[in-house]
Length: 463
Image (cartoon, one colour):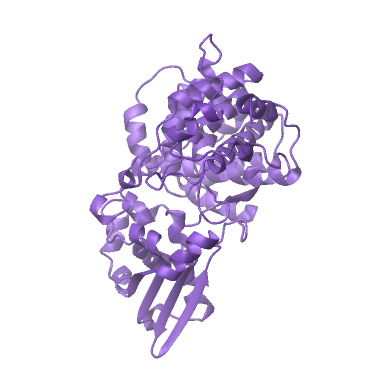
């Protein structure tokens, strides 16, 4: 395929109105990610970003939501991107069952920063968000499977954030191509599996994760550079440029950038998380919860809980007990015990994890949980690309079993807009106040296309 880069950009610019169902799904994506951005100011990752970058000063162009300070747009995008990642509640894009992107954290912070800087309308914000998601998810699919030692999405976040910002600035074809080239050179490199610190010998877990903050910064900066005479590669998506190798893959199928364009948008098929953890843990937690709930079991009568996960995933998520708040997101035993204890996932799971670990009621549950590596489930993962997990709960001579593939929040078992609202209020309400949080929800849900984003953001700021 020739002229892939230009054809893709032409496709982006030529996209017309969006179906109503896509608009509705975009409301969910924006509400969900902004909730994570706000809650993330209290997370250890978000706090460090604010501590380091929040004192830089400069033009007051964009707001750190939940904190209130205004910073230059690229710096605000960096900080809010890191905050969005902090609670580990950001959305997923997972064709089949293998996660290949967390698009919200790599796009929405950049969109909000650039939109506030330019005083964009809500219609412009929605368009930029949809096409940013489309870029991130399609490029991710185009380079799958990545090399097995790589687990990161940060490179294509930057490309997507750049495309989104180019839309907000109304760039033409050549300017947008230039944005892609600049974003490609500014993008963070992906990290290796070992750098994440999944395994016990690699702990504690790295706080870099996907580096969405740096990717959001790169996207905003790329668009600002493209307003000048700065020139970059106009061939980023061409096979011979080999950019996909920098993104962590030996495979590139550019046809994925074009297949069925406009028939369904990536943002229509996003998975949302209820539990502050890596998505791969959530089916195990859900299986245990449902085995208990559906059989009317009481916690004090349970003798043992056995969790079965694919071998590859189990090796990465069996670490226990968590040593830092970031570790909690990858500890399936901790997460399962917390869900059964509280039935109310929230920021306290990672902010106050040491208190929970010392709590007798928590230990009474956690001590009964054992995680097993299952070769059959691993084969299903490899052959069917389906993430099956299983839980068995023992009460006396009885064993109650539940298998789960699609957790609540996935496209197969979706969150309603009310589910997203409840999650947002739980995350944002304690920080900005319930009234301001509810006013933000109304603004996004009502979708007055001409409303200015500055007005909406101003309504979120603390008095």
